[in-house]
Structure formats: C-alpha cells, structure tokens
Image (tube, rainbow, N blue to C red):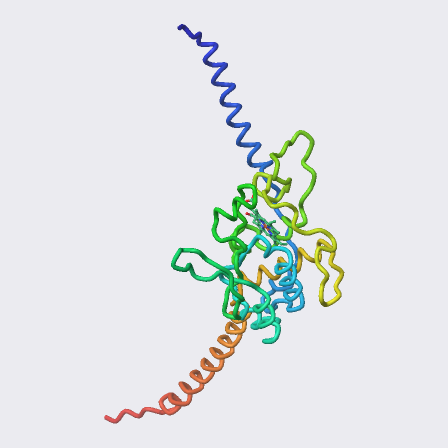
Length: 266
Ligand code: HEC
C-alpha cells in the first residue's frame, strides 16, 4: 500500500490536535475546585466548634453511617470533644459492631463498647461495592486529610449535586457532581433539607448539615489538632521563661568576672 506524504501529514495533524484537545479538555473540564470557606477551626489559636461537632456527629450517625465506617474513630473519642460520658455510653450501646471471625470464619454483630470504632455496615469491600452499584464508600475517618481541598471539598461535594449539563449522559447509578473528579459520582445525594432533626433545634438545611458534618470530619481527621495547638502555646511560654532565666543566670554568674578590674604587677 502506498500512502502519500500528504495523507501522512494530515493524519499526524489530526491525531496531534486530538491528543492536545483531549489534554486541554481534561485540565479545564474534569472537575470544579471548591471555594475556600471561612472555617472557624482553622485560625492559629481557634479550637473546633463543639456544638457544630455535636450536630455533625448526628448527621454522620443518622445518614452517612448507613454506608461509611470510620475505622480510626472510637466512641470514647467523642468524649474528648463534645459529649458527656453518659452520651458516649448510650451511642455505643445503641450501635452494633462486627465480632472477630468465629471457627467458620463468619462475623456477627454485637453491641458496641465505648472503646469500639465506628463500624462499616458491610462485612467487606465486596459487599460494600455490591450494595453501591460497584462504587466503594471510603472510610471517612481521615477523608478530610486524604482529599485535596479538605473540608472545603467535602462541603462543596455534599452541596454541589446538580442536573448534568446538556449533552452529558450518566450511566445508571451515577450522579452529576462537578466537584467530584470526572463529574460522575456513585453516591446518591445523601443530604437534603430536613434529612435530620437536630437535637439542639438548629434548622436542618442542606448547607447547615453539610457544614456540621464537614466540621465533624475535619475533627476526626485532626483529632490531635487542639492538643497540638495547646502544646504549642505551652511550649512557647515555657521556652521564653527558661531563656529569660538562663540569660539572668549567665549575667549573674559573669558579673564578678565582668566587673573585675585586673591589675598587672611588674
Ligand atoms: C447510600 C450510601 C451512602 C450514604 C448514605 C453516604 N455515602 Fe458517601 N459515598 C457512597 C459511595 C458509594 C461513595 C463512592 C462514590 C464513588 O467513588 O463514585 C461515597 C463517597 C463519599 C466521599 C468520597 C468522595 C471522593 O472524593 O472520593 C465522601 C467524602 C462521602 N461519600 C461523604 C459522605 C457523607 C458526609 C455522607 C453523609 C452525609 C455520605 N457520604 C453518605 C455512599 C454513601
């Protein structure tokens, strides 16, 4: 077969533009970047908003925990931030966790203790995928650290569901969300106005619930943050005191030397 030079050139040009075009499209259209929101736990000396964490846990418990576990967060951790020992015990009592495998390698459910971690509703990843049309609901303990944009991303994702733009067809079981990489997510919109009935009476709008659960997830990702900041302040104050004492001690000890007049005898 003989291919003319012209044909080769044209093919090359078409291929080249195709690849370049695809790259540009990918960079600009893949997904939207979340805006920055003014979280009040991100200031240098700010701690987490305990009331928001209480509501956020309620949202997690009543909505998200139907699909997502948190393998690094235990009930007892709730007592370190915003819950009484009684509440921690009640939440644990009302939750079931998986047992260790028995002699037939089967796991069962038992009531949780306060040292137990928030269970996944599924026995394993296979079951989790099967229940979610092939998509795997990730463990949420460290999700704010694991995703670029952190809590901004989680908030934008939860509030960003929309109808697909004209011309975009989604496979069944996928939902359009411009903040999710690729734009099609396998999680149905988990929140809508009134999804929960907040114990503290706060109106449960979509954005309120999304804010509270994002704050809760930011806390679980950085449980040690408050302790770290407190330690930072203590360490700074401590260092200043020790440095001042050392400076004074040195002056005191050297004063005789510095004030001494030296006479040289012939
Ligand atoms: C009915 C099950 C279900 C519920 C309820 C649910 N999710 Fe999901 N979630 C999923 C699935 C499935 C995925 C994986 C989606 C994918 O990879 O396409 C997911 C993914 C996510 C992701 C990760 C997105 C990413 O960047 O990979 C976050 C964050 C998340 N869910 C948060 C939540 C929060 C917060 C709630 C509660 C308000 C919640 N989900 C409730 C099923 C659920």
